[in-house]
Image (cartoon, rainbow, N blue to C red; front, side, top):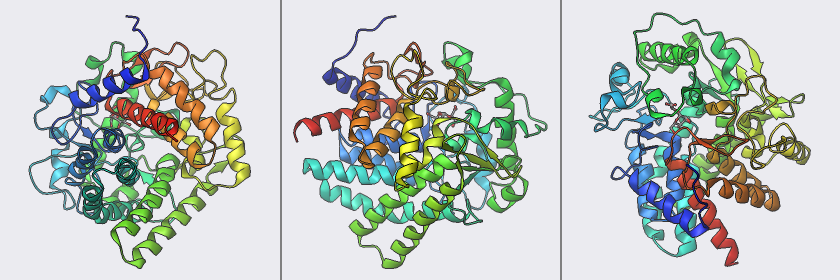
Length: 455
Ligand code: 2M8
């Protein structure tokens, strides 16, 4: 059905409605049917959007996630909704139950997955304070929230800097493509192909029942590997040391590492706000420095992008995907490198590709061999990725480019469907409608519009 285009004030109203409808009471499901649970990095983006509606509710989003933090500092990638019917999502809580007996899993009735996702949380937490201060509302409450959240976020970042980086490379190791958040992206294809699938119990995919066309979701080949890796990870009790030895998928993720650099910068600001001891600040500063170095080492001059690294195979994973812009997202890079990345971003490899509906970067370059325009992380445009790029461009002083990215992104969202992702050539919304993080970034963009008007 053709939808009429919404005006900015209507986008705000609809986005707020989406977040209200997905509000499960103190936490937000990622989408109404496809994702009925709380996802880690979705919640961070959701908090950024919620801040413009209610800073207290935004803080609660992060707090509820942190309530399920593991003993070793890990923030789980999913906190399961006990009310969601068992057949609504696979693999659900029962599937992860054995991992919940592990020594690091949180005690109590709530069930979580044993994986994690990119660490956007500290960035979100500081953004809540920024919004509260700009509005002159809820500042004291937000500061109290930050005092509670700070040690937990520090423990989370410490987990990533140690258990997930025993080599001290500055780069985050992942055990499963789900940990990258860009599940079936071609960035992981060679590493996934090297995974030999063992015995897996028969399973039914719930996701295919929630999208109009299975072509929008990962393939059966990919899912078998996803599920096998979950089996392997569970059998170790999610033990990081054992996984380093045994996990058949072991990779350095440049996007998560870049986000960690930014999240560590946010943590430094938070340390200032809560008056944390100096030693924390020097530790976090060292993590930041190490992160920049690690990304530098993963620079691929042929791609003009950063490339992930397959630790198992001992080789780089060169692919033209949105994750390659990691140094732009990390910020603080060399001016030459920034210029080069901007060139690639606007080139025919990405946003300048001919015949795109809007000049917005597809998640995978249309020139990459694994590109599929309707398939999930293999080609569609993801508003949440555009938010990350926009935010990074703003921060690098590239305000004009940032404004263009925001304007086209808002044009994309003006059909009001708040799709999970969009077909790059037709602009059709794909995956789930009413995806919470899409609504959230729309709210943040439109609040920025308002802010710039009043300046
Ligand atoms: C997608 O991932 C989940 C598994 O974690 C799935 O496909 O079932 C990804 O887009 C991920 O980045 C996102 O956090 C999640 C919920 O929106 O969905």
